Amino acid sequence: MSCGIQTENHVAGAVCQVFHRTIEVIGRRWTGAIISALMKRPRRFCEFREAVPDLSDRLLTERLKELEEWGIIVREVSATRPIQVLYRLTPKGEALDPVFCAIGAWARQFEAHDPDCGQTPALP
Image 1 (tube, rainbow, N blue to C red):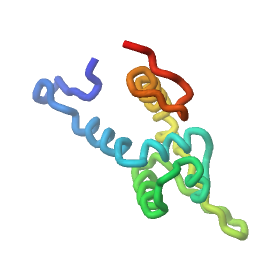
Image 2: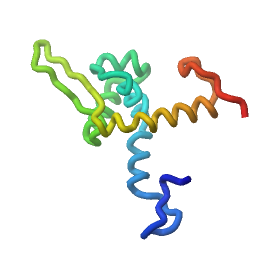
Image 3: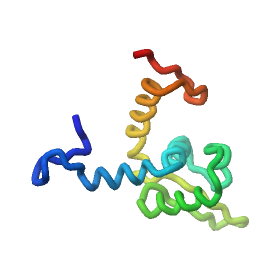
């Protein structure tokens, strides 16, 4: 199985450009952690500090804007006072759930134990 390879109408074995762009989008630094945090529930900006420690406000702002441009999240501004901004996944973003579950399962199986993941990987 090679989901990122095109063979029809393209050079055999060439990486599909759509696949490549998608990997670049979700593989950017901190993007996976942000999406993962939003898989659990919608969040306000300040709630990302607890969900994604060590992420700077500047980089969080940048990544949230990118994710919004890519249609993965939506930024909702309340009409109440004080104004509150809530970030949530779009259906396109929610569709990443099985992808993130598969990556998480792979990480638990092959990577070193991390107490935050809650599982020790299987031995080879």
